[in-house]
Length: 74
Image (cartoon, rainbow, N blue to C red):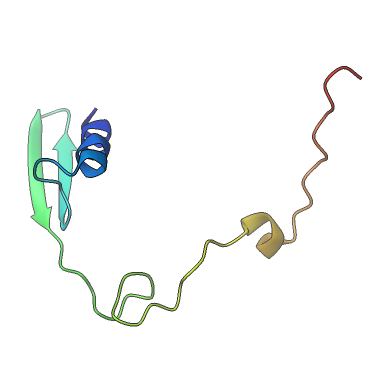
């Protein structure tokens, strides 16, 4: 539910998001804990000079051959 709420807030541009924070939930103790996370300027994804700029095709990367999809009605 919290993830869905965060998504709606991001789409609508409303409210305070959890950006830059990690929300941890302990269901046994019924407690929430919030940890601030700083952006790493050397991160290959979100740093100043990102080297990861596209999604990776894992099936191709791993050399996996996927089965052909079954045709409906055959």
